[in-house]
Length: 427
Image 1 (cartoon, rainbow, N blue to C red):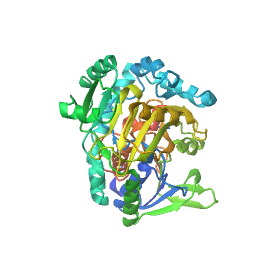
Image 2: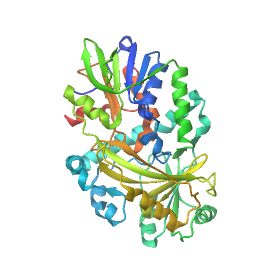
Image 3: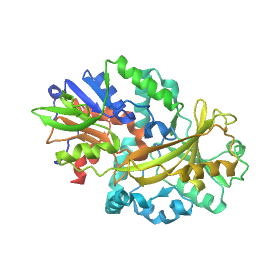
C-alpha cells in the first residue's frame, strides 16, 4: 500500500457525499459524528449488542500525559518485573502464543531509539489536541458536564518505589500535562482511602476524566441521530471497491455502497483489510476491571493510580471501578478469572472504601506493534479510510481522531499530522 496523504492535494470538491463507518466504539462513533456534521450522509454499522467495549470499560481517564509509546527499550527492560506471574500487569498466556509471539517480534523491531523518538513526537502532537477536541464534541452533544479536568493522582506504598517513581514522573516529558508533588491536604485525602501507609504521591494536572462512561455513549449516540446519522445493526464481513465507491457486504448478504468506507472496528480491522493486501498487525490487548457501588468513595476524588499494583481506581457518577492488566491474547479467547481475583485482592489488601456489589468486565484494546494508532486514507483506494489501533488511548484520542479524519476527507488540514499514523508504515 502506498503512502496515505495528510490532507494535502485533496480538494474540497472531492469531499464525499456518503460514508459508511464500520464499528461503533468511541473512535468509530466520533468519526461518524464528524462526517455527519460535515454534511456527509453517514451510516454507522456495528452488531447489535450492549456498548461495552474497551471504550466503555476503561478507567475513564483522558491520559494526555502518556506521550511515550510503550514500544521502547525502557518498556522491554522493565518487562520481566511487570509480568503477571511476578505480581505485575503484563500477561502472555501460553494458550495465546500464536497471537503474541509474532506481535512481540514486531514490537521489538519497532522499539529502536529512533523509532521511539519519532513515535513519541507524533503521539505528543496528537495528545495535545485531545482535550480541546473533547470539549468541542461534548459542548455540541450537550454533555459538557461529563468532562472533568481535575487531573489524577499516582501513589506508592513502598518507599524505594516511591522515590524512584516520583523522580521519574517529576522529570518526565508529559506533553500538555504537569506533574507536581501532592500537598499535605491532598496526601491526607489519599491516605484516608486506605489502611495501608502511603510512601509518596504526585498529582498530574492537565489530564481529565469522563464522569460517566455509560452516559457518554448515550449522549454521543443520541447526538449522532440528531445530526441525521443512521445506525445499522449488522456485521460487515467484506469490503471492496467498485469504481469510485466502497462496497460493504453484511453477514446477511446485503450489500451497501458509499463514497467512503471508514474501517474503525478495532481488532476486526485486520481481517477486513487483509483481502485488500493491506497489512494491519493489530492484536487484542485485553484489560480487566471490577466495579462496585460508589458507597464511601469521595465523589470529587480524581482517578488514583496505585502504581506498585499497576491498578487505577476511578469514581464515576454512581460506581467505583478498579482496572488493570495488559493481556496479549486473541479476541475470542476466554477471560482469565485470575485477573479479577487479583483486582479483588488488591482492593481488599488496601481496604478501599468500595461497595460489595462487584461486577466483572474484560475488554479488548486494539493495539499495533509501535503503539501508535492507524488513522488515514488509502492513497490507492480513495474510497477507503481507517481509524483504529488506539491501544490504551482510545478514549483519550477518539474525539480528535474523528475530527482529524473528517478534516482529511474533506480537504481541510487536520489538527495534527496524520502521516506518522498511516498504515503504509507496515508495508
